[in-house]
Image (cartoon, rainbow, N blue to C red):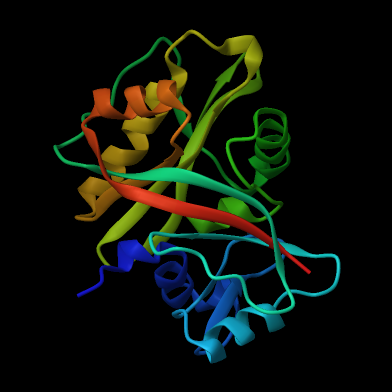
Length: 224
C-alpha cells in the first residue's frame, strides 16, 4: 500500500483545501501560496487535469517518489533528485545565543526577502500561511528562519530553513530546525523534510538531529 509520503504534495493539498485550486484528479496551491502541484495518480485523466491547472507562461513544481510523467501540453524544464528524511528519534529544541521568535503576518515581507536571497526552495508571498514559522532576529534584522510547509494527517514537513549570509556559521539553521521538528513531534506528528541529494551539508545537519533518509524523491518543474 502506498504511503501519503510517496505523494506528499497531493496529500497536503487534500488536507488544506483552503489553500488549493483544482479538483478530485489534480490540485495546485493558490498562486500566492506555493508553486507545488500534483496529480492524484499517473492515469491519463489525472495528468490531463494537472495540465489544465497550468496557464500559458506558468510553471509548477512536482515532487513525488514515483517517476514523474509529464502531461501532454506541458514540458519539463528542470528535473532533479532529492531525498525525503524522517525524524527517527525525539528532537530536542537546541538553545542558542539568540532567542527564537514565532513569526507572524507582520514578518511576511522580511521572510519573503530572506527566502528570495537564500533560495531554500520556492517561497511566495503567502507561503508562510502553510504552517508555523520561527525566526531569529539579530540587531533587528531577520537573520534566519525555519517553518512548516506540507502537512497531512500524522505528518508535517520542516521547510524554509535559511540563514542570511551575514549570520552564517552561528548554528542558526540547526537551532531553528530543531525547534520546528520538536514542535511537530509535540503535536504527535511525524516530522519529515526534503533536501537535494547534492546538498550534503544540509543532509548531514539533519542527520545530526535524528533524521534518516526514507527514500529518494523526484522533482520536476513543469511549464506550459
